[in-house]
Amino acid sequence: MEYKPFANTERQISRVAFGAMGLNCAFGNFEEADLIKSIHHSLDQGVTMFDTARSYMDSERILGKALKQWKGEKPFINSKAIPSEGNENPGWGIPNPVEVAYPKGSVRASVEESLRQLDVDYIDLMQLHQYWGNFYQEGSWMDELKALQAERKIKHIGVSIVDHRHDTALELVNSGLIESVQTIINIFDPLAFDSLVPACQKNQVSVIARCVLDEGGLTGILKEDTTFEEGDFREKYFINGPQSEYVSRVEKLKKFVPEYADSLAELAIRFVLTHPGVTTACISMHVPKFADENIKAAAKGPLPEKVFHEIRCHHRWLHNLYTGFYFPDLEDKKTKTGVGGFKKMKTRSLDS
Image (tube, rainbow, N blue to C red; front, side, top):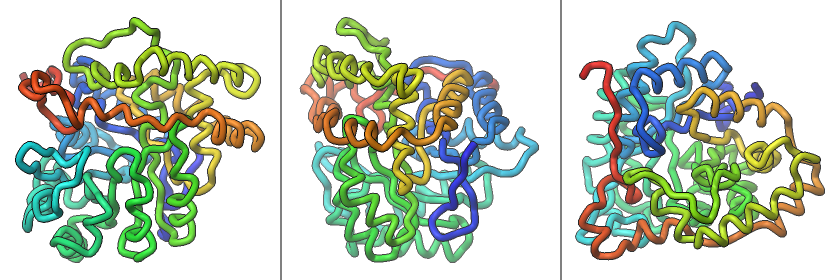
């Protein structure tokens, strides 16, 4: 496992991070005992960063439970402050005013609940889950995070950028007020490499890349007729491509396999980690097999420069697949629950 320092600290974090949205069974039903085993397995393999959120429902509780059973060194824990929703606007597709998304006291309340769910004294990194550029120097969210930092309830402050809006965080990154940015970076959307990642390098801000495998689509699992069970996050994701176009574009990536990567998943992970400005790639590892494959892929090191350049320039596909979640049909809105439009699936608890 390769490690990089977090921001301008001496704390080393693994270049592959455990994306904990899957602990909420957003990608299918799993036994809680198996999810806890997946956390321990990743820790055993050298993963030292875990990324969760208040919005991920059971995720924080399950992660906290697993860490209580873990006898090794405490990993670096990230979570995210949950936003409030406006009338008819969850705030993901179109921004709400900051006083609606994060009214006074809401960030503190979210962090306090995260501390309870995780059952820890402090959280290493607290991120604003829904950051828009118009939040810069507005509202009370930063003051609340600074106060929580002074109280030693959180160590570091960061933001998570809404979908593909990379440049909305440039002003904040250059301000010196934050230590990390989480954003989408993958083969289809490498735009963060243009401005955001260089700005983060200049200001010693860590970059947490998410959606590296694009919800699994970049692994090659999709066919034109692939469907997902009701409640799975991907149920209404790839169809916005449309799915046939998505499959066609993934097919074109196979020219690099196996000459430059053993699999499409390896190609996708190594593409993101080839850029030295990316601190860690946050990937779902709620199944031990996923963790092993992701870690093995990252260990292969960067892609050749010519391959990285070709993929960055000629395989980008600037298309927002989240649109169906943000602006669902009226019928869909009646059944929508959970942030981002996915419904909570059943996690079988060890206590039930």
